[in-house]
Structures are given as C-alpha cells and as structure tokens.
Image 1 (cartoon, rainbow, N blue to C red):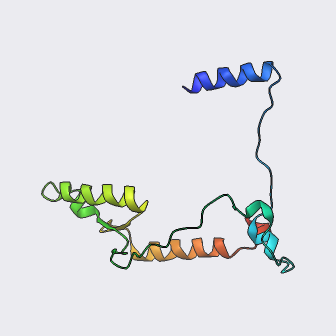
Image 2: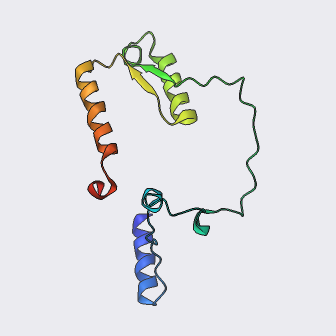
Image 3: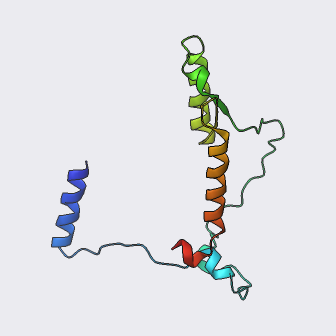
Length: 126
C-alpha cells in the first residue's frame, strides 16, 4: 500500500498536480498571550457542525480504568485483566497501571520533570 501511494504521488508530481501542505498557524497560546484578542478567529469556528447534543451521563461510571500488571501476568487472572485492558483501550484510550514495580521516588521525579516542561515559556519549548 505504501509503495502504491508513493508511486501515485510521484506520478502526480510528474504531471504537475498540485501538492498539498499544512498551513502554518500560530498556536492558541501564542494568540492569547498578548491579551489583545477578543474574539475567536474565523478559522477556528466550525459553523458547519451541529450543536452538540447534551447527554445525561450521570449514570455512567467516570472512573479511570485501573489495570493491575500483577494480575495481567498471572495465569489465573490474566483473562479478566486482558478484558479490562481491552475495554480501557477501546473506550477510554488510556488507563492507570498499578503494581508495575516502578519506584515511587522515580515516578515523583518523572512527574516533576514533566511539569517543569509544561511550565516552560513557548519560546523555550520550540
């Protein structure tokens, strides 16, 4: 499939077909940092979309799925934990992993470093 795509792309280039590329736009953080923006720029407004339907999800469990690595590696509990992992990935897109054996001091340091990265000014992140 990839080879076909590249062959098609090369054929289009040879025929002088228009090549598409991304438009470089400022990030939202850059646009609002001067505090002079008072309206949403038109390029970010999606008037073609219907208004979101309000859904009552008060009966839905809103707890982040927790996957136990010990249970995932155990022959007696593996199947049920795999089912939980499958659900977490498909329905949530993420999960919390417990009993992974990582040192809590290391995890605290890791979280601190990530927070420091997010706290950097935009110019330094580039």
